[in-house]
Length: 213
Length: 306
Image (cartoon, rainbow over the protein chains, first blue to last red):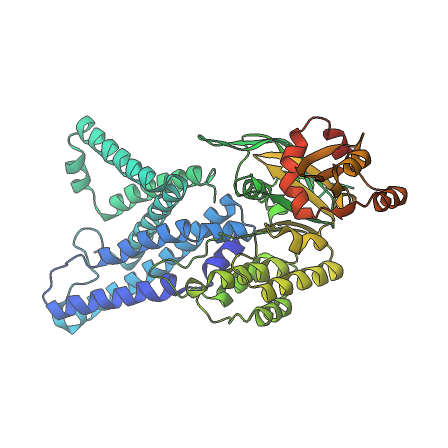
């Protein structure tokens, strides 16, 4: 597992530098626009973790297996690395939020790292929520990457369609689910996201077991 | 002693074809085996299953005494070099370099020899700071060979490792493989189409055709096993009478026959006296005929006696 993590870190650019650069860009755009409205730029970082999870499985798996990794160790090592990076970036976001709060929006009344609903509590709540959110997106991306590797583009389309169907079924079965989610506070939503992350982790693990390269 | 590879009743079915059909195979430790056969014969599927990259439909596979699938104790002692190896060099992330591939391999193989890897890169004229994405086909092959040899894995599987390599680079591969094998003996399986070029390396030869093993023999036993006899029709008929014959061609008063069986000194003397030419079939010629040989009536006994 550690060997896989080291393999994944042979080129750490996407893991280390790119999210930082993205955060810097998001910040620069928010400062450029001005105003104290949260515009959701942090979603770009979430998206980046999703894409990274997708690529780190789909693209890095064949050479990983060629180097003697098992599917299980590859999956566990990659997930471990993604979760560790989420922990680190959660801390970075919490730190930036603390600075933003202390300087009243960087001295410009800018709201970049404080979301009114999700990320507006104490630093540790922000850390936890960011960590769980980034981990969930990374694991979700990994699952997509594995589905693509195992069943190709058609499988990926079927996978997405299946999720849409499940989502619609839930909405029909529980019409108030949207309102219920709206009523949850940040930590509650973090709990829901954590539960989803566990589902993604289990789903990806079950899918990777029969992948061939 | 536990064989390096032991395969029993191995079958791999796909929806549209059977890649391997009831394969039985044993490969001893510290040998070099040539895995030969036509395109689509099932060689790559077999090697992928040995390396745990593919799953069998049925049958049992043991490598170093244990099933390889999802078995880290086996897989970390095994390396598979594939012609079509994918590296993490996708669009938008083109800077995965040769040095990164080698560094990754160095984490994974306890016997990794960095000095050997550098020396091989030099021999192949491959720069370590070159992006894998920009490598030519031959350079990608050179990278695979470098990883395969420098890993010094107990079981080293090469699947058409030198696609795109020129003759000089291929000779480098043969020389370095033999030198490495002499210094650090290991089990090597080499799948190749360049049979005669690599024939001198092989201690054993396995030929696969349409998913079945049609020939599994010691290379020394095969050399001189099959001979083309040509000359006057009557003399050829007299000489080959009572011997297994694969192929017969005639042109006017001349005939050419491919005959199975080792020739004694007495046989050769007789052939000379009859004015016949004797030409042993090369391994490549032999492999080309092996599928027919295996299914040909009366020839199977020869096969088992090789």
